[in-house]
Image (cartoon, rainbow, N blue to C red; front, side):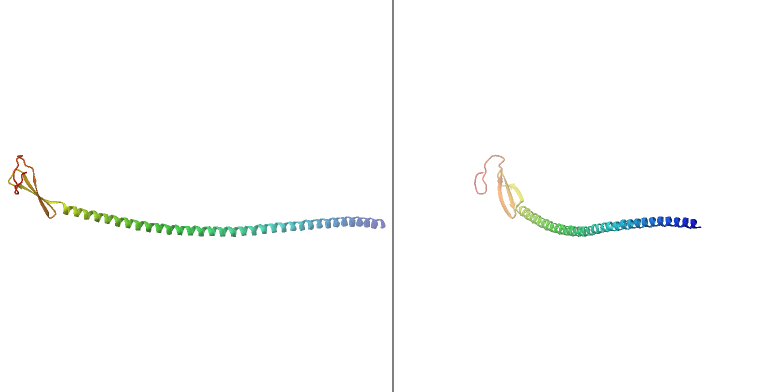
Amino acid sequence: MNATINSILTQLSSLNSSLSTQINQLKLDTASINNSFNQYKSQQAVVDQTQNSALQSNAAQLTQLNSQVSNYVNSLTNKINQLRTDMNNVNSAQNTTISQQNSNLQNQVNSLSSRVSSIQSSAVTGVRTGLNGCDGTVMTMCVGSLCGFMKVGNPSGNQCKDYSGSNH
C-alpha cells in the first residue's frame, strides 16, 4: 500500500511539476502577449496621431482650397460684371456715335437738299426764241426771275441792224 501511495505521490509530484512548468510558460506567454499588445497600442497611437495630423492637415488644406476657390469665383463674378458694364458702356457709346453720325448725315442731306433747291431756283426757267427782223434769232433766257436777251446766229451770214443799230 505504501508503494501505491508512493507511486501516486510520485505521479502527483510529477504532475505538479509539469503544471508548474506549464503555468510558468503560460505566464511567459501572457507577458509576451501583453508586451506585444502594448507595443501594438503604442504603434497604433503613433498611427492614430499621424492619421489625425494628416486629417488635420488635409482639413486645413481643404479650408484653404475652399477659400481660394471662393476668392476665384468672386473674382470671376466681378470680372463678368465689369465686362457687362464695359459692354453696356461700349453699346451706349456706339449708340451715341451712330446717333451723331445719323444726325450728321441728316444735316448733310438737308444741306444737299438746300443746295438742290438753290440750284433749281437758279436754273433756266424759260427760253423763248423769235425773229428780230434780221436773219438771226433772239433768245430770251430767264434764270429765276431774272431774264436776259441773246441773239443766236445769223443763218444768211449777212449783217443786219438790231434795234440799237449795231451791226451783227
